[in-house]
Image (cartoon, rainbow, N blue to C red):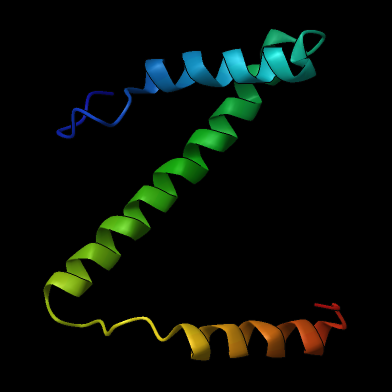
Length: 88
């Protein structure tokens, strides 16, 4: 899967890197079928994330975004942690 962005890996290059990382991190005993299934799930998630990033960039280019308020962001995170009972 070639892309218009030369810094973005092709699907084959991504698979090659994925296999290397999995094998070097204890995946030597994993079957090829399982590695392939795991990669397919990983790659679908990666493609979904890339699509969301492209949409966010397009939205921002249309002026539909605002600067990130870090104080407000961290307040929301802390509120969610409190609601879930997660200590800081």
